[in-house]
Every structure is written in structure tokens, then in C-alpha cells.
Length: 389
Image 1 (tube, one colour):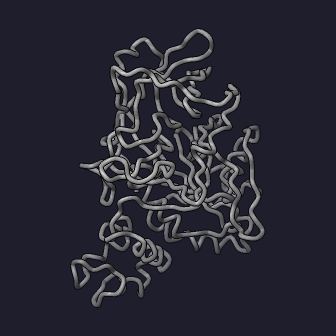
Image 2 (spheres, one colour; image 1 turned 60 degrees about the vertical axis):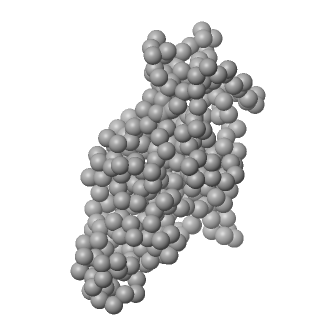
Image 3 (cartoon, helix red, strand yellow; image 1 turned 45 degrees about the horizontal axis):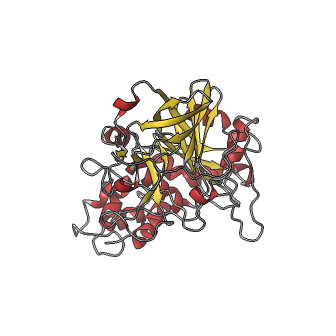
């Protein structure tokens, strides 16, 4: 699966547009507390409609990736004397930029623009930026360097479709190189279809996927967990079985995170924050309980944070996702994200076989013999029904 990563990265640089000869917009912000960024709920936690949405590159993206509206950077000539840093938190009109051993609260240069390129936010956690200091422990973001990868979602706070018939997007994470898909064995129950959706998202965005099934301590038999994820292991995906409670799998988890910028994705309540705390107990993270009524998680992460794990790597903890979609993916393209189905699809009697009901379908035959996993095929069927022709 990692072969897709290199194919994407060389095409994934984008740039932030510069609007010249404009007066800088006044920064509107609430009272700012330099030691904390707690006012992001309105920006990043959109109940019921929250998604991480894939957006590919127009010419050399994998199949099914929608055209990416180019987004990139201010010209850096005006910021040649600035310092390069990484955005670790974002708030309305302000951000925190890490510059080596210290960080600055920064405003954004008024000439930087995102909306005309299809995005509603200029900066996202993970952005590499050029900043200038004002001498009072504050700074200004002068430029955003080209992004290698993006995770975005539709911005439903902006009504309708605003740019070339497409809904404006909100950048959630920039420059991550792998996606840690966190599910739980129970509370909430394992949802294989959502795992598959995340796998498709990772591939379309050039991110290396890692499947992490947490709360395996709730399973009556560890063998059952292993059997459930066997189809993913057989396909070559990296799969971890973990427990933040008893420490199972944490050593392997730390190893796969080391040296990477990893985006975390998963429903609320699956234990993303608990896993991070198990890796580093001194992190200032909230852990939520699961509702007894719905067995669904309560939101505890209401903003996007870049977290440094000592001696390991960096992770971007994102808000829990209650709904997930695959922007721009067509039904005929879905098979290309199921390699086991694609491997036998060429033997079908009809070239345009959907692999659902047609006579002479080789995929149906492979399903009966066990060559195609029944669980994976059911995920394919459910996703196929929800896509457009």
C-alpha cells in the first residue's frame, strides 16, 4: 500500500494566493490566552457533519481523486529574513508557531488569501511557515510554504458551492505523512466500513495508513480480534491491536509513530487521547466517557492540536468524526481501492460489472471460495451504494 505514497507526494505541492495592493484585514479575535488555544470549537467541531475529505491532484492522482483546487503560498521574497517554523495551533486570526525551542503567537499577514483558491482557512496545523518577530514575543506569518499533503473537509459554515461548483474546503491537517486509523473493539463497536473509508482517504491523499484497533482488553478472546483484522493483514496493511488500559501493543504503536507526522482519525470514544496519554502520561489531554445509552463517544477533542511525543514523533489529534464521506469518488472508481476485488474483476463477463448482481461476475465467485473477504466485500457494497454514478 505504501507504493501510492511516493506517487502522490511529488504532485501534492500547493500554494497560498497573495492578494496584492490590498489593505490588511483587521484581525478579529477573542481574548487571547497565550498558554492555551481553547476557542476553536466553532472552527473545527461541526456536529453531525464533520468529515475529513480527500482531495487529489488533478493530473497524477490515484483513481477517484477529485481535482484539487490549488492552494499555496505567498511569495517568500518579502519574507527572506524571516524564520521558518511549524504551526502547532490555530485560532481565529491567530496561530502558535513553533520555532525550534520556543514558540510565538502570530497574526497573519493581511495579503495572504485562501478563499479564492477553494479553502476557507489560510493556515492549518502542520503548515510550515515563514514568520517575522516583532520583538515582544509576538510575530507575523509572512508566508506559507508549499504543502506536501492535505486532509480537508467541506466547510458547512459557508452556504452552497462557492468555487467552480465546489463547496469551499477547510484544511484540517497539512504535511502529515501517515494516517493512524483508530477504531475500538467495543464501546463504540468496531466499524469495518469506516475503516475502509479511511483507507481510501489515506490512499487518495498519499498518506501511509495504519490500522489501530484499541480496547482489545474488552474482547473475551484475543483470537477473535486477530481473526477480525486478518483480511487487512493479508492485504499488507499495518495493523496494531492495542489497549490503553493494560498497555498491550503500545510498544509497536510507539515504533510506527517514531519519526513521522501522523494524523489521527477515528470516531469519538475509540480512545485516541487515551492512547496518547498511555504513551506520554504528562500530556494535557481530556479523556471522555462513552454514553451508556448510545455507546457512542462524547467529543473531548474540539480543536486540532499538533502534539510532540518525546523520543517518538509528532501526532495531530483531530476532533472525533461523526460522519464520513468520500468527496468526488465515483462508483466505477471504487474497485481500484479494493485490490483483492480488482485482482479478479478482469475475469467478469461484463466490462462494466459493478460486482454486485451481474451474471458471470468473477468477484461473486471469488467471494464464494473465500478469495475475497466477506467483510471487505460487504464494505465495498455499502460504500458503492452511497456513491454517485
